[in-house]
Length: 287
Image (cartoon, rainbow, N blue to C red; front, side):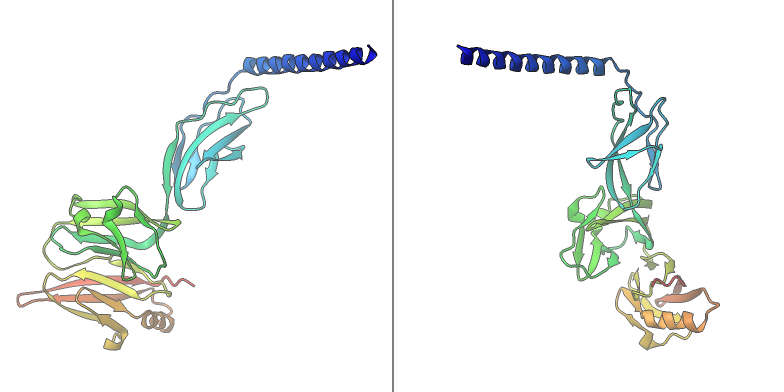
């Protein structure tokens, strides 16, 4: 009989504990429901990689949900450091308040800036547009907002197909080029001319790690190259490009320390006329 009573007592106390826990949980939930909710942050925007939004009254900190990862901050700004494509939304927090709801999610592409990633293309051209000479192993190459079939990697070159370029309107177009995990801003100026032109930007910045590749569409003109102290051994010329030896340019700037620019001239000639295109090669040596 005593054993039976002991069992009943244990059951009674266990049930009492369970009921107490349930009541406590209900009380806590009820208290939480009674807490005022913070207002949702407003004016979420991003400029040059800097996330910004308006301060929320009574908020002591904020949570940035970035690509599924929570980042706690106390200020109303946050600087992105690594280029990439981000999905971002923000909420406010404070003790004694319910979290605000999240802002509407925005997508932001943060890119590296490469001064040489500026190109020109004519709608009268019948070739693809090479945009990067680089040796890659199993590269993943994407152009933001462009069908994957229009960009490809071949012969150590990343190229955009003419079929896509011919759909663009005359004027400047901005894109984000993603190479594996790195994202770069590129610019393509579309023209509608049928005469020789350079496919690269006239202002080119020297990088001691690479030869200078000058691409052009000659439209059947003969092509010649000239430059200060330039000899035939300092460059390689093919049908649609000139490759200028990096060592020649590096030596030129070393021997002329007060010179910040080298001018390379491309001559396009036919029986009727000569057209000149110049590249202003700026001394910007990367170590």
